[in-house]
Length: 186
Image (cartoon, rainbow, N blue to C red; front, top):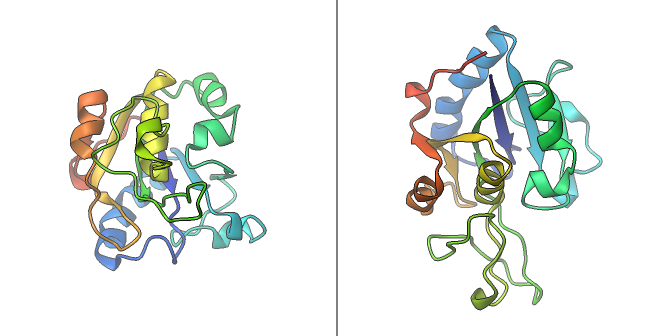
C-alpha cells in the first residue's frame, strides 16, 4: 500500500502555483480513495500553528500531520517508519518544498547533486552542507526499506525551481515519476 508524504507544503515553502496545481490532483485522488496522506513540516516557526494551516492543501482530521526537528522526517519522528510498516505501507510517494537547513555557521545551504550519500546525511567533506527536507526524507525512506517514488514535477526548491538531485535519487533506488503518471495503490 502507498502513502503520499508531503513535506513543507506551507504557503511560504511551496511557492509555485504551477506545481501546486499539479500536486492538488494526487492529493484529491488520495483523499477520494481513503488513502494515507501525511503532511510533514520541518520548519521550527510552524511548530505551534494549527494542523489545518500547516499546508496549502489543508490537512483534515483523516490525515497524519507531523512536525520534525530534522530535515529527514524519519530521523525527526523516530516511530514513523515502524508505524508505516505496521500499517502495511510499503511505498512512499513523496513531494513538497525541498527546504534546506542551516549549517553550523548559520549559512543557508542547498542539498544538491554533489551530495552522494544514501542516507541523506551530509558528507563531511561538504563543510556543513545539509540536504533539503524532501531529498533527506526520500533517501531515508529507501534506507528504511520503503519503495520510493519522487514526484519530479512536484518537488521544488526554496525559489520554486525544480530540484537538481533527481538523478542521484534514481541511482539510489527511487523511482522518479511525473505526478499525473503516478497510480496509487490503496
